Image 1 (tube, rainbow, N blue to C red):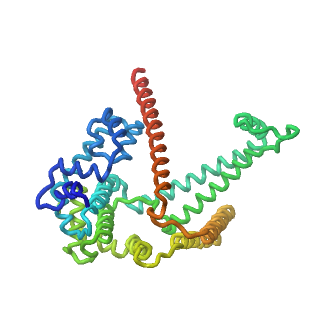
Image 2 (cartoon, rainbow, N blue to C red):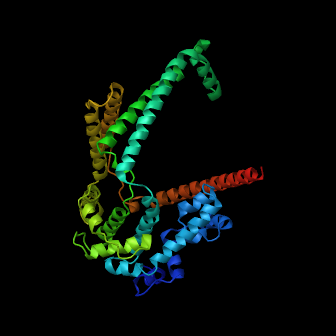
Image 3 (cartoon, rainbow, N blue to C red):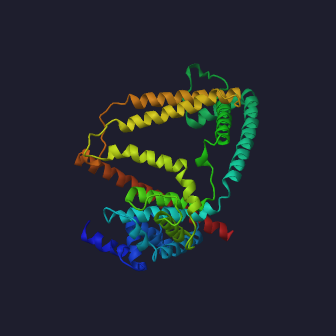
Length: 406
């Protein structure tokens, strides 16, 4: 750690609250904003670059959100940060960081968690959201079926005209003799709708069977907090996850909950107990075990570990959809779609398992010239995106002003 970094992070490891000015300097290193983007955002919303992360700054520049919404976001971020000030030093006393600069990673994870809490709290119960999603999928399948029937009729009625219009629009080459297979495009679109309806039916079956949980939101704020606390303690060191009420781990959870909500001394025992038995906890532990050997460069590295994991992932996907292919609940069309997904997953697994190695696993295995070339390409792309975002924002704000005048 450099002397500058040590001075920057020192307030986190002292007793007592952190001064707001000190924390804003720290958050500037957690969420570094390009000075050019900061200048653009400050012209529109003063103070934005001081408290908002780069992705949020881009939404201001592009005018994805209104100026009033952006100002509200700045105020909410300041209030959130002020909740952190008296609590972060206590959190860091309960973590065992091997290196102080890991504090920046901890703050990134905690802030990401706390920023999501208001949205999660508005999501409603998981079982209600599951029923809502199934209803939406059923309605979508009906609508796609209706459009599919319409296309089935139209491809015989207006297919020739449609093909000619699309070919001319796209500048397609005229076939020898001027002849073109009839109804080609509308037939393809009709087939695509059949596949879409099959995909909807497959997804609905997965949701019913509880195999699409990431798609179903819930309002389990405490579960979200516990998962964040577990990430911190397993990655950076800290009190182990135990289900005993009043444990040090429970205290860390309640600290993060207070940072997110402003409510102190929350009871986290139930949420901790549920997380301890959850798939999320099991998957996190399995990931740590798999990464341990790969990350330890003092041991022989399995150069093909990444491709092997990819192969296993696609084979698991193939197994899942092969089971759906034989599921009697699916229609004939949906079963065929499940078979197509299965075949594709097997092809991906075969491609991953046959990929030639050895692979470059670490950044320092690339030549300095190659690293410089990648950096230059990234900078060029970033600058092009900045110009496009700026122009898009200008056009949107101009259009908004014109609509207000009308």
